[in-house]
Image (tube, rainbow, N blue to C red; front, side, top):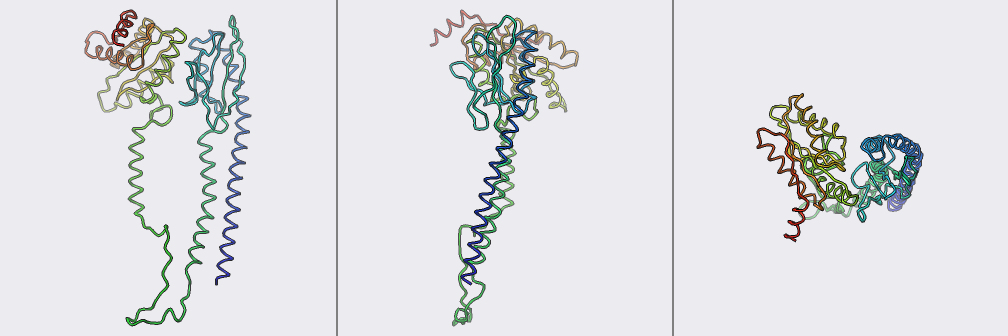
Length: 388
């Protein structure tokens, strides 16, 4: 029996080792194959991206149609993670598929170093009239993260199955199937002496259904509270948790290029049984009108904040008035609050407070649905100096 047990254990160890090595080799092969396919795809998608950028630049380099074309092309691609447009003065515009593929170094956008991203970027000059040294730089995926997770999951399952079989063999052959005559000899109380069952860490008992229910409930609660991905559950607006960080980045970029920036705070009256449907429709119209989907965030229960880069307060007010007319045509009651950088070195928190205050004034004012906080740069600098 002992020799048979040793043979089975040796066979189990050999089989497990072979399967484990095979799982690793299969995972490496799948990652390599997928990376090669992504590289081939990236070449074609990058060429299309450059062609669309050259076509959009005819209407105005770095104007909103040009930026919108770059954003749409990036969203439609499957292999490009982030893009940086460079002009004569350096990086002029940067956009990423999701949060985390761009970093800010010395107030300049840079590509982040991530395991799923190929470190060598794709670079191409742009044909822009009256503009020299315009280039488009992009980074591609080595492999998309969820595909990597799927490959590792499959490899783990392949490795776990023989491990479970080996454990079963170990337990089975570690327990003697027969007891010697001497061990079965009755004692004084008439009970036979049986060999003890080997104990190990796998003999503990757990109430699996209760644990699963608690984990499911916790996961359900966390899903509604913690951001996951770039956009919220409705797929239209970004998470509110990302708003202040993104606004800080846009303010630094605006300050470095001496550009203005407007923040628009809007809230719709959603009284009724279809409040969520009404808000989602309103958010889709707002994002479509202002064309800044990656700079649009949910605020509170039924509020939206949109960051409008390179737009001054007067321009922002005209755009808001035009959109408000569309809201009235649809029978929607909406209030708007605006504030602007206006040449100030202002932080995101301050700008959000100003826009919220303007929105609160619009709520309380029965005559005007649009209120704007118009800062005085000189008075603001004096205020900061007095409180520093």
